[in-house]
Length: 124
Image (cartoon, rainbow, N blue to C red; front, side, top):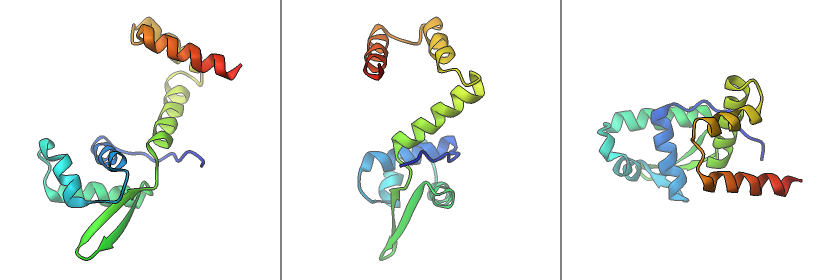
């Protein structure tokens, strides 16, 4: 499936994380319970959900009086598109520069480096 380049705001991303984690259609009440600690009102959650549907990131289906949501955009697709944007816009298209920057800033653990080596060895 081709990656979808959908711009998702910070609050919308928190909603998407809940929906991705659910792995099944999830109602707005359950979504609200998951993000309760954020102190968002139901109207705020409803606005985020409506925006995500409008952007094409979610499907919404009504069951009785409740709305249930499923992702149209997978977490993997989202991460891939965001990473491509970072490489393109921040590192001038160079994945090598991005990885070098992470390494220089000590953002990569020894385990991360081993994992990257494994990934790159598989590509050869």
